[in-house]
Image (cartoon, rainbow, N blue to C red; front, side, top):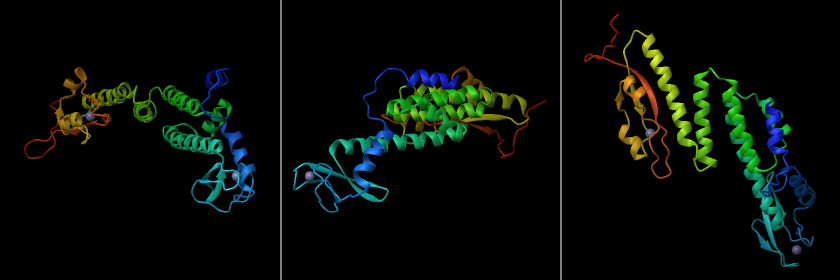
Length: 256
Ligand SMILES: [Zn+2]
Ligand SMILES: [Zn+2]
């Protein structure tokens, strides 16, 4: 089912002009440059080793210099652009695959799904990651702790790559899970509890509520989190469950 969705998504006939296939690109770089990194990629004259981009003395073209496997390679402007995109693609992939695996995606399965999805462009990679998070949500429908962490990861993703367009909705889903789970604990345990907001310090709305204490009932009726964003700083506060103490610092047990 999952594979089917990807195939539909990525093997569609829509042309993504983002950038060329990563694999094809790598081959281009290798054949042009690993044999001799001292040749101008345009006119093939020997220009010596270079650190910064330069103008070829023979053909007057601007030649770009990048590091690849600790070795300098000389690139045409087009190759240089592809190189940069390839680097971004790999770093987005690495970072988010790490997060997906931490959230319960089997690494081998993830690599396999990625290969089968035929993803080649950055936009498709982002779609793939987003769908993989949704797949995880459906994989663990009753593990609320996992669900919460997946929502937090998704909100981070939204902030980093999608201008945070879904971030507040996702943060609310995550925070509401805490409230629901805390209310169960409070009902079941013999100790008395209160909820405390552990706030972000550099967002003014968050900082104002830092360490503020609530009864669970108030929050269930009127959840506070997430706060609104302050500039580009989204709320990253969490609810905490805190046992109530008496004036002598002793834990308070519920009346039975
Ligand atoms: Zn040249
Ligand atoms: Zn906040």
